[in-house]
Image 1 (tube, rainbow, N blue to C red):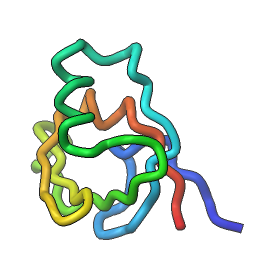
Image 2 (cartoon, rainbow, N blue to C red):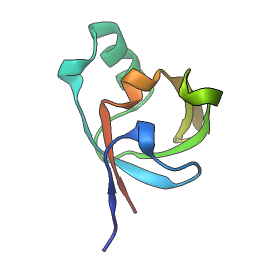
Image 3 (tube, one colour):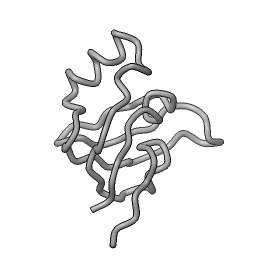
Length: 83
C-alpha cells in the first residue's frame, strides 16, 4: 500500500505524486487563478525539484514539462498522493 503525503510542501524531492486535492478556499483569487493557469488541478502529476535553504522561500516543482516556483504557503494547500 502506498503512503499518503499530506501536502506538496512535504513531498520528498524527486518523488512523483498526483495532486489529490487543492484547498481553493485557502488561496487568494490571484493565487488560485495562477495555479489553474499553470495546470494545477486534481489528478495532475507533480514532482518537487528543489527547496530553498533553511526551510524558507519557494519550492520549485515540475508539472507537466514546466518548472514552477510556489510559495510554501501555497504548496501547503495542495494535497498529494504518492504513486
